[in-house]
Amino acid sequence: MYRLLSATFILALGLISACAADKKEAKAQTPSEILEELQEKFNEEEDKGKRAELIKVYREKLFAFAEKHKDETGAEALFYVLQIPSKTDKGASKAKALATLEKEHAKTTKMGKVVKKLQANPDDVEVRALLRLIAEKNPDKATQAYAYRSLIKLSEMAANFAERIKEDEELKEKAEAQYGKDAIKRALDLAASSEKDIKAYQSKLDGELAGVLIDLSVGKPAPEINSVTIDGKKVKLSDLKGKVVVLDFWATWCGPCRKMIPHARDLVKRMANKPFAFVSISADDKKEALEEFLKETSMPWTHWHSGSGGVVEDWEIEAFPTVYILDTKGIIRKVVVGVDIEGIEKEVEKLVKQAVDGK
Image (cartoon, rainbow, N blue to C red; front, top):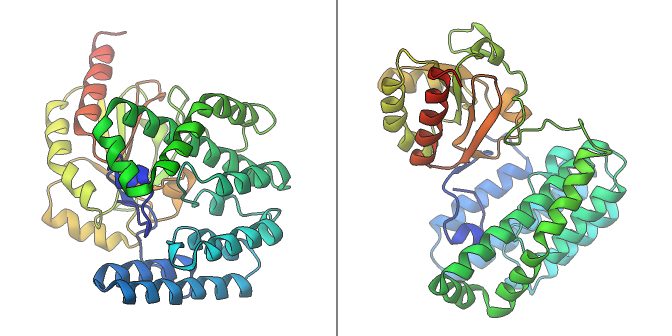
């Protein structure tokens, strides 16, 4: 699942089942390590008072890091502050983080990939305002584009949430009880303008920011991947053209990823001798971890190793498993984040049938 201390209501209501992409061997003294250590201690501690103290201590660690680092890593620390519950200090830490980000980092260049790490509730108007400021004022085009993408994501989340609770009165009551009627009303109000907002933000990405970022949208050609197999052989995605391709971004430490293995094994078996290729791309930092896992677990298909960089970073994978399904021409036809066995199998079977029939 996503590694958030204060789960957004979207995630808390179970819309996504995936492992966080930054679940890796963190280097010392990074914002990611500070947040991860807090998460671990927070989960181990049951006493509410001690949990509140943990939040206070680690929040200050992140602020201290941001004070020392005025670059994009400092901005990352402040983004993580926004992920920590702020009810204990009546929102003071959130206000401080937002003010510092606006004053010191909104125009910081080379922070594009930090911007995309920002997690927020879709009804968080302050975070949306910050993202709009970054999108409009940052001199770096990549940073602008990432900010617009984040705004699109928040709008999509709001629309998705609104659609669900409109169809499920019980779910709506549960959300109102947990987050308050005002928060749910605010989310619904924002969702009402989501379609308009998404079009406006997308027009920026398609216009003046066209080509700045990799476009991994459904219907677009998948960009080239240059990777290596676990035995060190250089490979390219374009070598698989003419086949329906499943690109499975995963890691051995990811529980939902492991849950998919038996289903992937069955799918590969059913698609034997057909124009089909299943490629698992490992984000394990150490290739040895992947090699040891494969000794114990039968995964009889192609394996590429990326680590947390490489194609995993280039394709901006935020959660595991993430699955891209490509048709025989290399066009992206479906993207699945989390576990959706049925959805993957249906799309593969449809595309393979079309390939066999010559359509």
